[in-house]
Each structure stands twice: as structure tokens, then as C-alpha cells.
Image 1: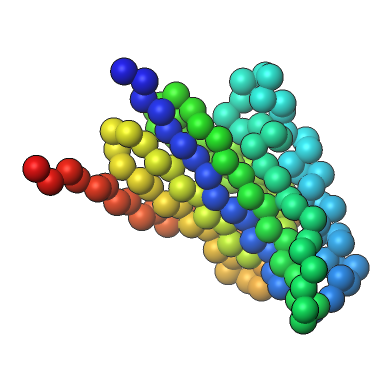
Image 2 (image 1 turned 45 degrees about the horizontal axis):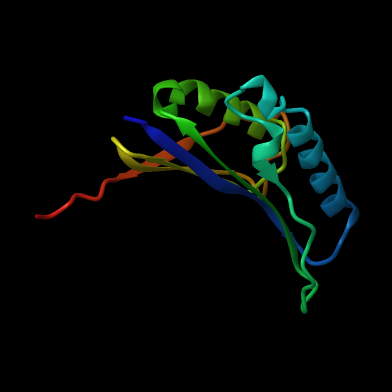
Length: 143
């Protein structure tokens, strides 16, 4: 039996009213952190290929938010989940962000949602401790 786990989510930065210097600094810093992750070919728990920061869409009001999307599947990653969380938080500590959400969908243990929220306007790289809350749900089959 293959125990597949799917991990996906997003990291959101603050909303900017225009493409300011701060906007570009945050975007460049976050892209650099993701590019420093190992390649998927090295079999790491986190790889640069699983993260994406798309180009900004044209926006009518000039507001922009940097959003990092990520996702991949593993074979039973929940057995290494503490290590995965440790690597993810290590990456978050180096980035600018307002919130981060990770969904862990497992065949055996249901769905878990992990949420990090900055206590300030946004998280500044290499500052402060991170706190996470976890929500768990499991769908049961009714016969």
C-alpha cells in the first residue's frame, strides 16, 4: 500500500499600493531564499522546484501582494513531519511574509492545516520566533 502525502500551500507578503522599493526588496529576498534550497534531484524534504512566485498579474487598483505557491507529493512524509516543519520554518525565518499556510493531506491521518502569522505588520528576515497553529480534520466514510 502506497501511503501518499500531499503538501501544498502559500506564503503571503504584505499588500503594497505600488511597486515600491520595499516591494522589490521583499520579492528579491524571498526569491533568493527559494533559489538557495537544494534541487529535487538531491531528495531533500524541501526543494526549490516545489516553490513558485509568479509574475504579478495586471491589477486595476495598483495593489500588489507577493504570493509564493508551493506543493509536492511524498511517500508518507508525516513520519518525517517534524523535520519538514523545521526546514520550512528555517526558510520562513529568512523571508518577508505576513502569513504562511501549509496543508498536509494524508491517506491515513486526514488533513492538517498549519498556519503561521506575523505578529508585526510583516515578518522581517532573521528576527523573532515563529509560532504555528494546527487544525486537523478527517473525513469519515458513512456506510
